[in-house]
Image (tube, rainbow over all chains, first blue to last red; front, side, top):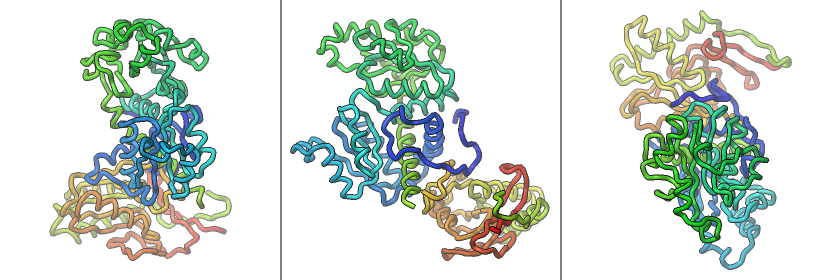
Length: 326
Length: 181
């Protein structure tokens, strides 16, 4: 394990859990809370190596995965995280649920709560949808991606991976490349990496990256070479092909020619810079296959760490819930 | 120290050392015939340190060595809300299958931590036997659990607290009784 900057190196340090009952965005987490989540994930990662990959911590708790958008990896990651903590997991496939029959978001949620659900993990195409649920329910709501707004657990697992690999986040430079404008992953990472003291650069074509991000603390680049100069982390976003259909890109080929990350272009960043991607990848479009599979790539680690980070979020929310009940 | 309580030192550095040496030799004698199967597993955050010291004493005095493990029961507790701690990794040397696992803890009180420790150990395999060695037994068990080896029996009132301090974590070695005034 790499050297990490932990809040609590002494064994048995008491934790108070998180300040809020929900995890909705990186915006509302303090630097200390982020550190606590990463430190907790560090220990929970160990459960995956037990002969029995399960601990009884959330026995008798129910987690509902309420996904209004398709997702395989995030949903599976949350499902495994809950299962490793011994919670019961219900997956709601919206296409076959009563939502298809016209039920409102709030009615669906109240129905779930009437069935004594403790955690709702939610993905929705509308920004702010999880916030509406959180305000109206006693259950803890975890945002698994809302519109173009945020995807906090993705940012947390990315922060974890960087800290694990580089030893610290503070002072590092991360360059995110792609469709920044429509990316909740980019927004959450911008907020998270800034909070932890990193420099954040955004690089993409002007149609997919507005100058407004400067106000949020990002350095904006439209050319790849200067954006990668001195970068410790090269973070490649997935290109949605519909951007081409929407007229935001002349062609996918144009994108690859200017922004596709190849082995040659990786050399523009710091030697040994980390290559990251939230998945699923379009090989040969935004990332060359030899970069995705190369020695600098930590894309597989991101997936592995995602389960531990989501376990940490569930655990710390449960600590707060259990305290509140007494 | 809380202004509303008073402290009495029950064991000092020398007394702790004597107790641990005696405990270590007791464990060695009791499991002499199958010493090759014995593992000392200390409970975090103080028991693992006591286990390490016992192993050092055995090496020094009897020339025998014993594998060490460290057990974190945070994720196995029945009171996640009240006593939440930052979980730490559990480290078990090899498999516990067929082994004699001696759990080492600083204070034995209600027995709930030991219940959690046994659950945790069972997730690592099927030990031939689990034994329990504690530096201090303060009574007030809430579960049918009894120690095999005890450093010192200290009868206490339920409202008081026994605090074990070790150099490695707390900067000094002592066992303190804290009582409300």
